[in-house]
Image (cartoon, rainbow, N blue to C red; front, side, top):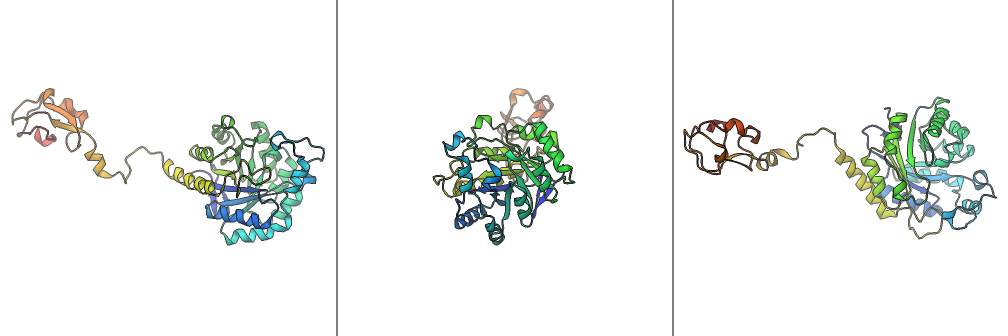
Length: 343
């Protein structure tokens, strides 16, 4: 499987998971709040902070019915109210550079692609846009890595998206398993789809998470996710469509910390004693053959004279049948471990 570079990081294979802190529209129209979100993501040691660049008139019809999870709000007016002003982008990019964190943003129209092309190391495409093959090809033609969320998509639709991206000569594709429900109940998450997608498409697979809490994305990393994307907010009680299911700053820090610990815990897959476990535990805490009674020199050893216990300085238990029937070469004290030199 090919590895894909985003900024200074390689993604895929055994590389560390690339963690995207999704600010989205949780700036609530405030540039100061957007910068605070960047501060939080950088302090949490996420690899990137991501915003969304859309215009309501290019995204939704004014006649679009409301979504149930938005509790009757007019979707067009709501989306209009949470647009990220495009004049912010240059300043946000500079602010991210000062905080040593990658700036990412999802474009939702051609103009946004052109604008972001000057600033982002990769394009992140949202789940609902996966069937907009013209948009995918337009972004892919810029030659940057493409990160594609796949909420609600089946394998055929994902294959269509990959084909569209490759048709313009772009092979740098990362897919994110995702569920398009806010918040997502854990019973529909289906983390096993990560391996299904990896097997089917032979590209790095990540997970864009909309569940409550941080345990599911951590589990996704244990199952091999190469990228994690997670919505975060300064405060879940703030008004706006994405705050209620987002994690707060302390949770983001914990998520990043635990992901890095899980990555270390995954190890190499080779089943053997580690260097840190050392010889002491290996010998003192394992068993070996001991004398159950005093055994005098020249005595023919029977099973009843032997006991297997710790430590492991003596003959390994698997050789007990070899020891039985041998003669003691010296006096062996009760509870003394037996070595090959003694029989």
